[in-house]
Length: 222
Image (tube, rainbow, N blue to C red):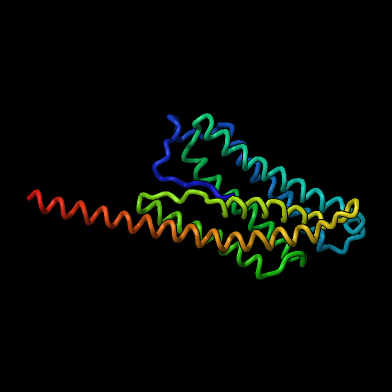
């Protein structure tokens, strides 16, 4: 759920609008998060009714996560396609993504379905990239999504619902596939964070050189 956050993006003519399709999809994604968390939270209960419906609750969480991920794709696609980029959407969309992924990972950790080290890597990486983008915006630079970032998102979006379902339908070992996918996501997240860091450092160095060159030219003109 990495997004290209360019401070020079062109906002919609009504940039302060809230009620539009991309924002509705983003808000719908936020509404889905409690459904995911409650479905997984019930796994911690010893209530007989809950125990008898654990498989259904796991699938509800998994499919709701898939639905939320789909809305994440479409709200960005529609916003770019129809140039409906608003201040509210630019603020809310990344927050919705972080809430969805981080809260899901924490619940999977509580259920013992994912290793604590993986959760730390993925959560801290999200925090680091957010800070990196804020730095880039302050310098008037962008941090475009790289290939590794896309692979990280793809494997994460596969791994998380598989771990939520925690089932083996038709002999398909979802917990194993989910674990492999989430480990791959953690590897991609580390390398993509390094890729973003190096890319931003190069841009900052280039910006400094350009500023120094401008200062030299300004001195010559005096």
